[in-house]
Length: 404
Image (cartoon, rainbow, N blue to C red; front, side, top):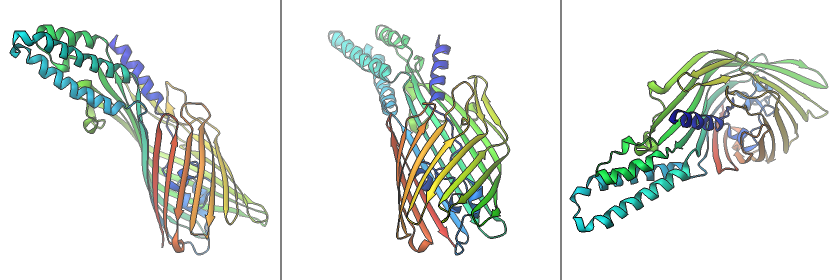
């Protein structure tokens, strides 16, 4: 029966980990996670944007970091409290022989009250999910009129943790009082964790294929080395400590690597070049990695996204939609995003952003985003984004950029 419980919990965990070939650009995140029609500073999202630069733009370097998490049911804190309370209960039961006979009824009642509290906490967090995802990336871009190019490194991933309560544990604890001996490690309730990480590094190239009086068309590609890591762990709930919940032990880690390709297209038209359209296909070569014992397989499939934006000197309104489902665990439904974002520019040195991202397949809660950018003298740029949503989702991103 326990294997069934674990399988159900693993499926619930995997449900909380819909994947996204994403990078935590603060400019992208603040504007509803729209990026593929921005400018050359967003080339990591669409390599065709390498050609969208001003004549005075030169070498550009950017570093991004971001994180998003949700612990709606306080699973982490409650699990740590359970572990601490089990230590106290274990000491109390094992010391029962030292209690005077006259004090035993009251002492036993206190132990049972401790068990009541532990069982209540276990029921509260049973099969409840803690989820988090994050990423970090860096890029160096050299735009020019011949063949713009750049180098990049990108890492993103997700983790889910859940408690799996075995109802037989209550009887084990009650019986231990009668026996006068208790080892919390004999309990069957567990904390389980599942996660993945995608690491990429490579080159990107962009070329303006058409420069017509009425429109422009650019194409780009990213050639990259890619590594997929899939990890899993489970520990006795009595030993839970979020600082020591190791998901990187080789015993629970599997990985695969190889090469992959992204391609992008970008076009702009209108009397003032105000209309922008882009199409991006990530991961043209499908990859997968499996946790054999847990019967879970992570598919890194090709994802195609289209974007349209209106831009003028002070305003950008952008929208993006996934034309295909995103990479996912094979056993589960994938996510498919639609997003909209707005950027207001003030004196060319300050930007304010708002946005919304929705999962069309209803796997994830809507995310509402906001951001601000400061770019004095168009040399140094600092971008900050914050995002929140249902189920206590909350996160932020930071981007630092320099034009040399």
